[in-house]
Length: 455
Ligand SMILES: C[S@@+](CC[C@H](N)C(=O)[O-])C[C@H]1O[C@@H](n2cnc3c(N)ncnc32)[C@H](O)[C@@H]1O
Image (cartoon, rainbow, N blue to C red; front, side, top):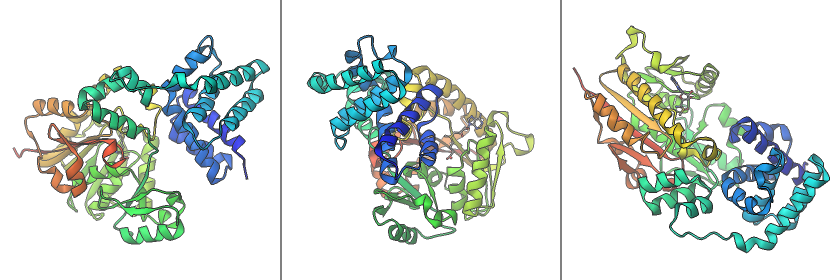
């Protein structure tokens, strides 16, 4: 069995990969954990350390700025990451005794650096423990205080307050700092929701499996357990998917036998959901610009027994061959976006995506929307979705789409397609629905359904 020492070293390696090489935290975690040979408890610790340290980065750096003489940026990259990792444990992890956290951090510093560095690490962490009270943060209504208390960039906090008001913005920030939960979508072509819940509970008694109030195909897993390791996964009983994300296919609500285009489809979470809802009858073209990701759609479709999906690599903006224009009954555009709704799973989004990136995304989404609109048959349905709470990419984007495309009308009855719990909580924004992260402790999502008028 591996010990907690190596857990911290694995965590440090992942933090360095994310910061220096721009790796995605969730992918880097998966890859390094699989290689590490750590047991379940230590894997849990690594996950906690990596997500927590990235999540709390600006608060940790604010403190380090006062404790490291020339500032933390003057240190070598790995030493800066190591200090963040050590300080995170002292400030946020009750279950790790302070002595152990300091001792382990200094030990790693000795292993990886020279004596000077281990002395510095030791001094900084010990002076934090002595001066802890100086770093108490109080909400005083300012953007700066909220940004430091919850560790979000100030521009993002400002934008959330502007869009949702201060109370809701605070709920959003708090929720995005909680651990991501796990949910599954049951494949009705292969299994029944109650039976899958019972089978998983039998295999993982600690898992706490329950029926989701959000989606009629969803199950939530609140405790520990790894459903992907259950034999039912390979047999196509279920897919691991966030609950909010399941609402998109429910809003599209395609009839079996029809022609569907998913224009930004990889890795295929929503394409496979759509095909399941169609009872595997009809035709679903799942296309994405990245060929390596198109393979993932094919793999999932095969595992779930969905033969109506044709996956292809294509830039939606280069579409269509004339033959395909206006030939789809339903078109889904699940657009690339700023991803604020999934910060729980990819906390580095807070630090890597800058304010100006939103502008570029808005332009790309606009081009993709125009292309998607061309593919819809007269009388057909267009659904636009994003996993963000940023209004310029959501309701404002749709406002300008509707102004440019007067032949599309908003489907105002969209909530009737969704569960009572969603009907009660979802916000109505410009004809679309907005799920916020604290509504169900799931991802933030915007979804809007429109119909193309018959000529
Ligand atoms: C939000 S993700 C889609 C997630 C997917 N719908 C699912 O549920 O698994 C957005 C996708 O858009 C793709 N994309 C970006 N630009 C594109 C373009 N010009 N044409 C087609 N796909 C594009 C990206 O490769 C990415 O996979």
